Image 1 (cartoon, rainbow, N blue to C red):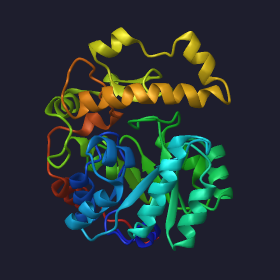
Image 2 (image 1 turned 120 degrees about the vertical axis):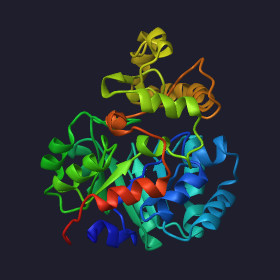
Image 3 (image 1 turned 90 degrees about the vertical axis):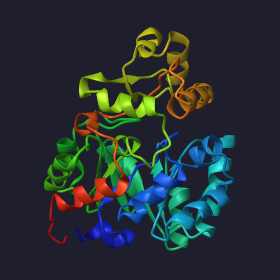
Length: 326
């Protein structure tokens, strides 16, 4: 599986474990990297959920693997406290030797500038060609194409459509969404993607610290059970439909909708949603409190039949296909 993507990152299997709040615990991140893929640090998970000082959290992961790991940088307005924290975490990650970063949501120019100065690589999450072109203007090195089967903040286009619309941009293209088993993996690579990013598949693993209730919900769910809710982060989020989600509804209320439509007020509304959901999602996903049942998942649930070890999953995926050098 030697290609432009794996050579850039220094990995052997073209699989990214996507950054997940609250499921990106150090043991999961390290297990994916140690098995030949690459695990991605989600800073809020590392610090808020698992209680690490950020630098010490990275060092804990380094105790478990010496292979490459990455970091997710969520981009918000530079006037926010969140930006200041993320900026500091980025500097610490570079100091600790992290050289692969995935940016999400905003303009990644300031991340690219700092990472490239340190000899690192930046890939950018995109759901549409417009955002890919904006990222290219900022100097990104690759694209994570987030499709309409992804967990978390899903896109609107299919994997096939994104390949058609982004495939001519001459950057490594990674598919995010809908990969639950080795057949999905093989089919995705056959479309021309150089690798995949998976989240839901890695939640249902022995190394992930999510609750048994959450893992079992993934095993039981089918793709028709995955719905998009605006009421958790302010941006459509893929979650498993539960009685609690039915009671809450999927659409933002009129005041929230007005704020989300404003160029300035949308940041405040997302922050309000975010503060509330931080605790609710943590309680449901990690502590197993069923009252909330905020269980993020993508439509890859169709291919997930059991809770397995990370190494077993990656080995099975790697044996399912041989790709030519690109």
